[in-house]
Image 1 (cartoon, rainbow, N blue to C red):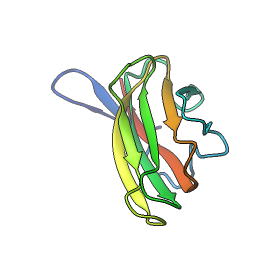
Image 2: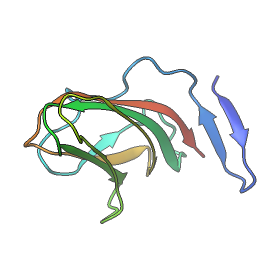
Image 3: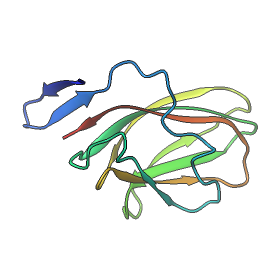
Image 4: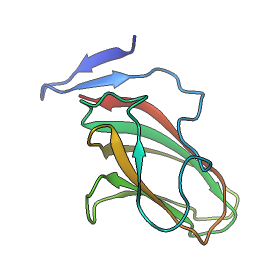
Length: 124
């Protein structure tokens, strides 16, 4: 069972522990410059308010991007952007979720060698 940690504002973080298996990657995610819903309910409880991710990425060119946001959140998003071709990027991000769902947009013009999402835990 994952460990639960309480913080002073009465929310809790559930840590999944060490993650070595990819939760989401390019074969699962749609690459077409549009936001698409990603249902995480098989891994994240519906009561979760936000999810903590590690994203590991590598693209063949500079400037390729992947944006992640809470469902329907117009302008506010987190982004992974390649700055140099064929160099790994590791980024931690917290994304708000609704019913264990987020939205992801991946640039269609770039080629990602690696774009892996690891769910580290969630906030209740």
